[in-house]
Image (cartoon, rainbow, N blue to C red):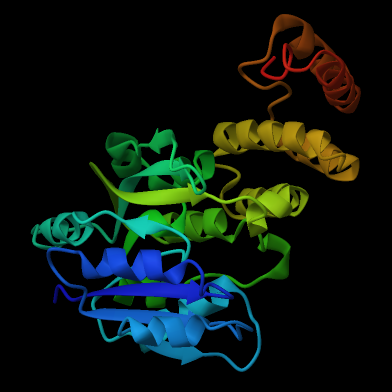
Length: 311
């Protein structure tokens, strides 16, 4: 029961798919299935995918990548699923590392793989993202609350994925559905671990959906945190409050002031009045008037940027 499917949700991805599918063909151990969900693309996404031997499932209307991932999970006959964004790439060692995990006696339900973050135009290495294996295994819910986990770095046990219902397609969490998804998996008891050898490249692409919709992403993150407070707020008060303070800071940057107020209020309702890493002056001000403290901080950052950006 170690079959492995590469599942790719795709919308107008014809320009990027060759790179990913070529990298899939270079794996030492072939994928058992390569599936592409064509989300009503208006370009040659389906034709390009088929030219590389992928099985294409085409939707009747554009529903978004979360719906596409759920549909691919339903269709695949493999025991394990690896989702991948159409504009990213696999290194040749990915399936070898994956099968090493699948052969272990007590393989966790979710394995996360470290990845490189590179500029799409120049290939410049921007960062290497590592997951903390010990923290994941100790408390996956806390880790998922505090860290962004993207689907292109995950290996998922299909029966467990289907058991919890896969991705939620709630429009409130659109643009931050990956964080919601991994919190959901952890909250439902799926076990997590991490592979430390890098095997994936994630590319920074100008005008990508996330880059073009930062405000929508950070508002969606608020709703993910709000939903998590409703279900796990009593156990993870500190972790959630810290994320809400961070969320409020980015919301302020995006001038989403009504949501700044909501995030600050929710953090305080959890019993935390100040962020743990704030300076003395900011801690004092935010304890007195949270909204005014965040407003003043953002105005100062805009005036003296970049000197106060990380204050």
